[in-house]
Length: 362
Image (cartoon, rainbow, N blue to C red; front, side, top):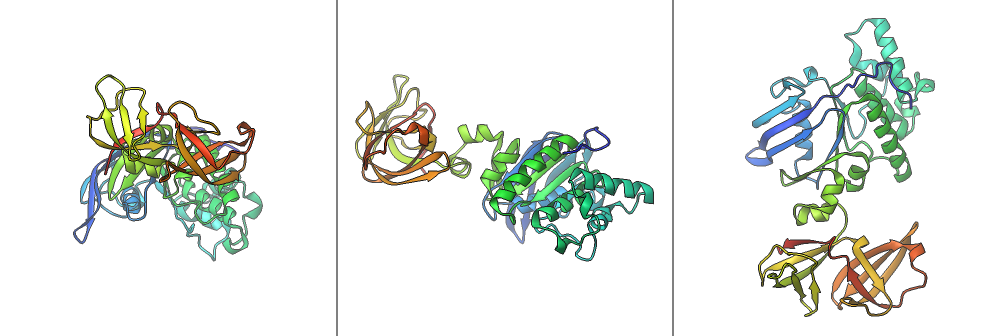
């Protein structure tokens, strides 16, 4: 993908501090704090109604927070109108003007520039998103992926300090979505723009963002790099929202010799390779990622008996749904090439306990 004529980074740091807002007495966002470094991509994700859209409206200036501050670079924009914030916006439905051509849509926010500079900026944006042959087409004459590129080009044309995208890939089919996510990351890096994507799709968030901001019920549950949230989730909500995990209820049987011992409901015990962080008799939940489950056809030390309910190939992977000790659903995933023979219906399950996480029982 071509780079713009100017290689100077466009993006600035976004800092949200102590932001709260309510609608008719109902708290929409509550004491939200996060920082997105200049030139990086962050994803705000969470279930419907968690406050994502409210935060987007606050950052872009369509909504003034009841409490808190929004900084773009060294500028406090909390009270600055949207049109003066230098923020570009890409909506889920792209919001292109149906009666305008591609070139006219991209030029829409450049009315303050001299005609020649406006023409050059539009040509530059069309080159960046590879739409030069479509300059005179109307949106209805273009595919969904092409329309999305027009929307991104229109948002970038005024050279904003910050680009916001609201569920930008949701309306696209899976293969096209993956291609455009990759293209967007390339574009973002070439421009050095600071970008925030709002999404409920955790796979999408992890594939494009350098920072995840997970929200729930108006609050930020955890913020950090995708790998950190996946490997070290702060709580059960983040654990379940960022990636899949099987949950095993247990009681702490021993925690006084540096190595914990968990007792499952069935009476089986799991020896933890280190302190558990809970006192004996505490009710806990052991969270196990699918890739941390190992299956064997014959017993191994510490393994639990399980019944293989379903095994489904997924590309080069094999996904197994199991019932451990007759009651607890557990999912395992492994490379198909590593499974030299078909597993029996009854298998033995062991966990990479040094990679699993313990949480207090809800």
